[in-house]
Structures are given as structure tokens and as C-alpha cells.
Image (cartoon, rainbow, N blue to C red; front, top):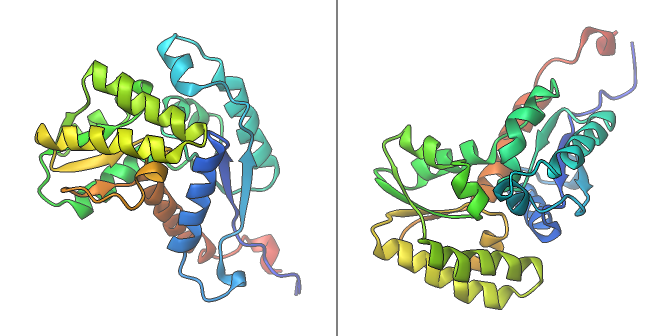
Length: 248
């Protein structure tokens, strides 16, 4: 009999996009985990490398510049023995399908988690407002998933997107949280005025800035939804029987 404890499955976090958003995801991951002690928490390995070229700028310019950095991060997490991958960056999901094709590991999808959370938290919603990078909007990371459930996507007009949403995301990345909070609260209320009966805070910087802001409709945090999806994966994975060679 092997007396060595069977290692628990490890979650790999392909992060750094940006660093504060990754830290926010880790806090939400810990808070979502049903644990009564340190030892009951999920083993996590974080690839927090912020030098990945800006995902939104690259996509809008037709550039693939982030790809080699994302693939290198994936390979690092694979080599570290991770059993699943989470990417706490919405726009990086432009490359999700390619990353998933490059690995046998499950790569959890923040858009799927976010829309699932909206369906649970805002039953009967018919118009979902999306606050996100321009690239996430153009790539329809959320639009098509909402449409599958009969929910129309509402987005800021070009002017509001530039002066408020994009500017706020940049402010969070620069550490100017209060500035971002004012800009995003205005953008959120503009979408509500257009008829949004739920909001998706679909850039991982946005929930950081809007934390504690009261809005008139449910505001869904896909970062938190991804964290909860990871916890669900882990609880299931750790309960699976160990491979035969570890039981001998």
C-alpha cells in the first residue's frame, strides 16, 4: 500500500491580465470555497505575468500578439501539474477555443459562467446590459450566449464606451479606482435607462471598481461566477477515485 497522500487536483490560473483583476479573482475563489480550515481550500497555481500584450488593443487591430504569451502560460501551468485552467480576463477569451484545443485540460469559460449566473440571479431577464472592453463586445463573447436564452444584449454607444467604459478600465489598471467607479456607475445607469433589466460586468476590472455601488437591477459579476465554477469543478474532481497506480 502506498502511504503517500494522493495529491489533490490543482487549479491553474492564467492571470496577470491585469494583476489586480487576478487578485480579485483569487479572493472570490477563496470566499466561494466551502472550507473550515486552510487545508480544505483548493490548491491553486497562479501564472501572474502581466507582460501579455493588451488583449483588446490587439484584437481590434487584427493582431495575434497575445497568443504566444497565453500559450506559454498554459504550458507553464500544465508543467506545474494543474488539472484545469481558469482565465480571469474576459477579452483573453477571444483565444479561449485555441487554448482549449492545445490542451487536454478543461479550460473553464468566463462567458458561460457569467451567463449561467445571470439566468439564476435575474430570472425572466429579457435585456442584458454588457459593460466590457470594446474587443469583448465585438467578439460577441456574451452576445451569442445571451441570445441562446432569448435575452437581447444592450451595449453603450460608441461615445459612452470610449469616454466612460474604456476610460474606466484603463483607470483601474492605473490604480485610479475612485475615478473608474464614477465613470462606470454612469455607464451602468445609462444602460438601465435604455431598458437593461440585468447587467453583466464583463471585464474583470469592472467589478473591482463597482464593488459596493448600488444599482437598480442585478449586476452580475462574471469574475465571481468563474470562481464559483472553479469551485464546482474542484469539488467534483477531488471526489473522483484516484488512478489505479496511486491506489496500489
